[in-house]
Image (cartoon, rainbow, N blue to C red):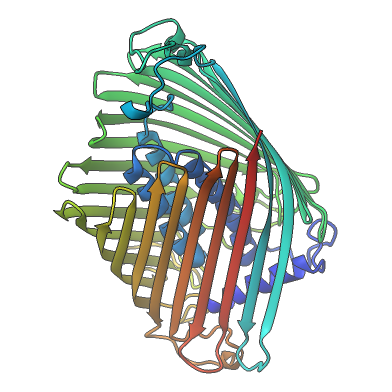
Length: 568
């Protein structure tokens, strides 16, 4: 949606210039518009995305490289939805990636090859391990726009240098089982490997634009026979000080209990409570609480088969903006099956219903955008081994959202995409991918005909949405080495066509006008432990969105982040 990208970018640039004081200036209107909601959802998405990338960096030496590649693929797919400002679907994909992290085995000291083993040790491995890191780096971004009839390009660029300190502690009494002169860990049941395991993590970060801090604690208690419980608490806060005054803190507490019903079946019950508070809340940044309760059944057969089914009940409440309160029912099912013949099948289905209550009298926010809806989301990932080092992979997804009271401002929509690709493994650590991409999205105020109330309107078109289809290609390179080097590069190119778009009085400015476009996006993630105590991380995103028609809105965005970490 070109006009929405331009609007959001202008808002961001005003904030960066210090011209928008979110906490100090009164709102000119009592309505929270869609661009504000999307801005808040984007911030939450980026936080979860970076947290997941941090997890990938921490586990890049695992032997389950196929799981890491799949997680990186899901992050890339989520970025595609985020670029379309569909952060709800993007968030679902990140949650799917988080579920895949559970497929990796519990972290234990790595067993080295026979040629690298040391035959004797002076002392057993310590039960507790401290890790301290100093971080420093810079975030750079550049945004360039051509706004229709305006002949001059509008280019903005800036940077944010930062420095930080990260401290982590891992305590695992079972590490003592790696006794002196032993080559392999013992698997016998002892008081040590039933003892409480915990880890803690703290990060302090100072930059030109903001200060931030994180404190996380995890505890896990094995109960025997594969059962265990786990609790986690995460406290984080951020204070912006350069261009606008915004301070908030958030605390997330979660608990999980897992009971093995048999050798292959287990039952899980979980709860997560989230509390978010701003120093000065308003309808743009409202305080809220959220609770998510879930239970499910999982079937596992080694690393080859996994079936997962769970139910989630989510409640979110706001004290200032009750019209944004909602409750959500979510049912998730997934199937994963792999074989030794370089073939695998992954299927996932998520049904959810989000219910917003009626706007109460006197609500200062007057939610006019978020409405009750139900959504069906399905995705499939099929890999067929053609040879030991060559596979045909087909990825596809489908999403259907229906609002209880559809209207021109928030119409129902249907979306689908398919991405067949060839995967070639050049070595055990290097893989390349090349494929064809087709995407489709259709909007309608009653996309599945059934007797539902419709909003009172005489409009025949959706000013903010337009049907489209795309043809394009995808290219990917994944390099994961056990010596601490990880590289993932993904490129998506789309030739997007809006078959029903018509010119209107705003077309000269590129607003409310959907023109056929070429969209190219490159995402790069790089991590390298180049010395025993030094690690470099790079995250880069290049987007080029330009119209195939002259005098329409084009944009080019570049985000680049690099940091160095020194362990001591």
